[in-house]
Length: 64
Image (cartoon, rainbow, N blue to C red; front, side, top):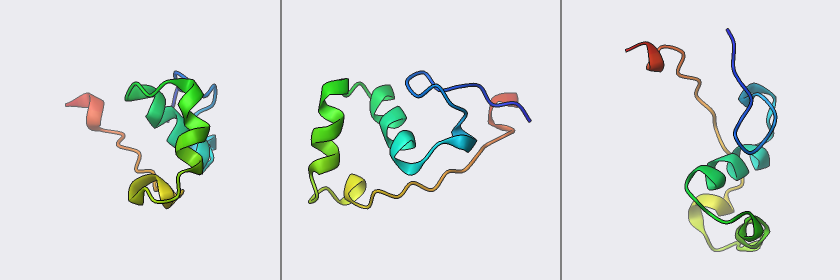
C-alpha cells in the first residue's frame, strides 16, 4: 500500500512519531507553526496533553 508524505512533515504517516502526527494535524486545522511548541508546553489541554496519538489507516476511505 502506498502512502504519500504529509503536507507539513515530509514523511509517510506510518513512519511518523506521535509528535509529528500532532504537528501535521495542527498544520491542517490552521494553527500557526510558531504556536506548535506553545501548545505542546500547555499541559492542561486534555486532548493534546495526552501526547499520544493512535493512528487508524483507512485504506478504503478514498475509494467510496
